[in-house]
Each structure stands twice: as C-alpha cells, then as structure tokens.
Image (cartoon, rainbow, N blue to C red; front, side, top):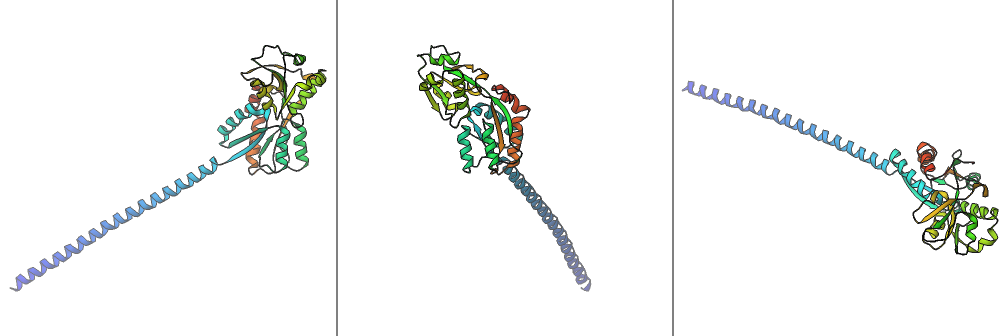
Length: 291
C-alpha cells in the first residue's frame, strides 16, 4: 500500500516537473517571439523615420525656387536657359517678362523678384546706387541688336528702314521708348536714318518688344522694329538694322536684395553667363557685349 502511494507520489512529482519544464520552454518560446516582435517594430519604426526624413528632404529640395524678371527680348532665350538650369540644379525658375523700365519700377516698389535680367546697363546701375541689388552681382551678360520685321501677308518689300516710308506700310510698331531700351534704340535708328519726322505718324507703341512684334504677327502693323532675338517667328520676315545707326544695347543682370534665396539666384546668373547659357544666347542672336 505504501509502495503504491510512493509510486503515485513519484508520478505526481514527475508530472509537476514536466509541467514546470514545459512551462519554462513555453516561456522561453514566448520570450523569443516577443523579442522578435520588438525587433521588427523597432526596424519598421526606423525605416519609417528614414522615409519621412527622405521625403522631407526631397520636398524641401523640390520647393526651392527663384523668380526671374526678364526683359521681353529674352522671352525665347530665357525659357530655354531656365529649363536647362532646372535640370542641372533642381531649382525651379519662375519667369516674368516685361519692358526693362516697367520691371525696374516694380522692383523699386518692392516686387519680390530674385534676379533681374535687364536689357539696359543704366537701369541696373540705378538699382545698384539705391541699394536694391546684392553687391558684386551686377554685370553685363550679352549685347542685343535690332531687326526690321514685316508681316508675311503683306506684299510690300521692306528690306531697309527707308522702306517704312512706302504708303503700303500703314503702321510701324516699336516698343515704347519711354521705358523699353529697344524702343529707344529703334527711335535712334530712325532718326539717324533721317526718316524719324516722316515716319513717326505711322508708329504704334507696344509695352515691350514682344508686344510690338505681336502687332506685326497679327497684321495690325505692316512692319516693326524689334529685338533681333525675338524676330525669328513664322508670321514675319526680318532683316537686321545696321548697327551703326544706334548705340549698342548692352544687357545687364543682378541679384536683388529682396531675394530669399540669394545663393540660388547667384547660381542662375552664373549659369546664364556660363557655357550653356552663352550657347543659348548666341542661338537667339545675342552677341558679346560692347560690340
């Protein structure tokens, strides 16, 4: 009887021992599963944080942009140069075009441009003197030229300035000389050609050279005198105005004091003057300054 009880007690003790050992094994397995889960949570948390940081960095890089105020004669060239600059730097360029004088007035009244690409050196000098530019950033980047343009739908031949006197040429468009450098150059060329007093009653004025060109493209003006850099369009024919009839149109640029990203603005000006920008300017018939 005692032997049976002893044997039963041994079995009971063995069962308890096995249960305890089994419990230890289960606890160890649970601990391994728990640690594995913790590791995975930490791993995915770090991965998420890295992704957020990368996304924030990419967003910051993508949001970097500058606004460039450009003289209207740069309408074609600057669009191409800006596209190349964006590809190389990932800095977005927002372009605004107008006459040099009108853009200068906007800048004087606090317009938030980063870069001013003018068609005149005197305007940039004036902004320099008033402390509206970043010191050391002003400089000439190109020289411009004049062209006589004629609507292709007109049968009258216009190959020189004196042809503007023909009765078939009813209207002649130029940029407003009061605030557009190419308008002043056109007026100077007409005076030096000796036809200003005769032709001035035919003149219609555009706010800038692009608008003056548009008048000829649409046929509202038979002919016009505009920047050579914008003259190569399908609706018109063009011929150069002899450069000896007007003073050189040297074009200057600067970084503006109100710029919120002066480093990017300086990069852009340097890019315009660099190899890529220079090739594009030449493509649109700009010349080296001080011709």
